[in-house]
Length: 120
Image (cartoon, rainbow, N blue to C red; front, side, top):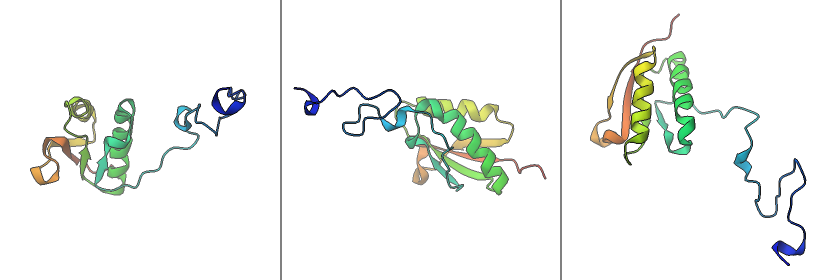
């Protein structure tokens, strides 16, 4: 008998809560994830495919909140996430400039971004 002695196939539309067959994160979220708007965003918590939309919306919200200097932590690794972030920043109209963070703030594992003030 496998998996607890019962048929382990979950019913259509249900989640198997006993053994995690259907991972909680596999369904689209019904509500947007709310992030506090601060001057630092650590991107390690997001899937790589989510990074562009998360960063873009985060920077819009920062501008609206009056935060004009922010730090995006993408990590050092292979540099792939850094490249994705930099490519996005080059194309966003609300970005004045960006550069590597100083060593004590993450060095090339983080990007400092200067934003234009939001329009009145």
